[in-house]
Image (spheres, rainbow, N blue to C red):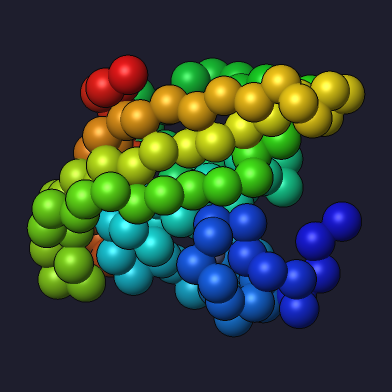
Length: 133
Ligand SMILES: [Zn+2]
């Protein structure tokens, strides 16, 4: 269980309560594309499918999202950010996401992806992704 004083799963180095937890709890919308990307990683790490669906653009959002309980998301590296600032309407974030098996922690893997985001009515949404490796 991740408490507010735990390190944020998004690997920012901040405490969860001062980082992604604010967006996950709907206290405030993520202000930038990168903040949304990080909070979505934290949502994967904390199995928060509701948040993932809520921040998925309606045009590309799946009807149901089933998270694999064996997949532990433990490290996020942000590699590049293009646009996606607080006043932008679109942006992309390139990242590497690392995960491991909950039942066998030696089994680890990662993937690199560029995700695209749009901002509508003051909220950022994840649109789609281009997997790079
Ligand atoms: Zn965070």
